[in-house]
Length: 335
Image (tube, rainbow, N blue to C red; front, side):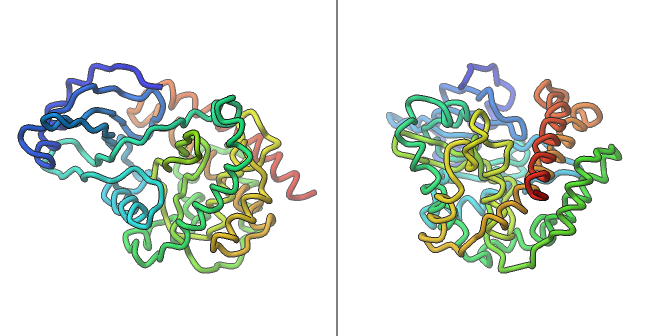
């Protein structure tokens, strides 16, 4: 959903940046701000060059701090450009903001049409025939992404999430000095059941319902690459299949639209390694711990970090909902 918004502030600077890219005669029109999304400021607009018009998207980072888990914009842009070059469905990266632009960290991509609203994807009539095929399509896409040589992303090699994803979560959790026994139980379970380290792959890091742009024929684009890092391929599969991303269909493990068996079979059939349900279960627990800590971060930013917004405030309550999902997942893991 989009709403019109008064964004005069920064509009002139954005127009100047695009003129640098497209030519002095270029202008921007039909500007709107999506109502969803909070970690970045997103603006959708038309780039007009003479008689041609192209829809584009501007993304500007809004979060900074010692607990910031998000990649710098330049690293996101590089990963997206690499994925796009390999035929992965990502919005085409157009330009990266420079410090002299006065727009902070960010970039511009092409606009891709489709649906991202989870409730419509998992329950809408328009996707009723498509849903049974989505898990297999997701498996094929993840196999394609994980098949990209991680050596081509040197900017990810030394991030905290790439070096030790569990230690990264512990470090972020400790910053808030806020006790959550369920999260601590999850961290302890993860440490006790930590799998052997295997070859690293390029991970999206936030591959889930809500970041998948879906059209009548399937997934048209994968959005939001600020959590990309290197790690176990099973991590992306586990994140997608946590209880938090099933929405109104908890019985459909994969994003609320598909079955885990279909996802794993398609992933292997398209070149990914064989991943077991037990591997996925570990990363489901990990994903819930990580998601709970991310919500702690957003709530903390609302109270103490100057990012006051009802969306961030609601993340404090959302942490408790995720803790419930975590406890239910741990119960099944112990069963």
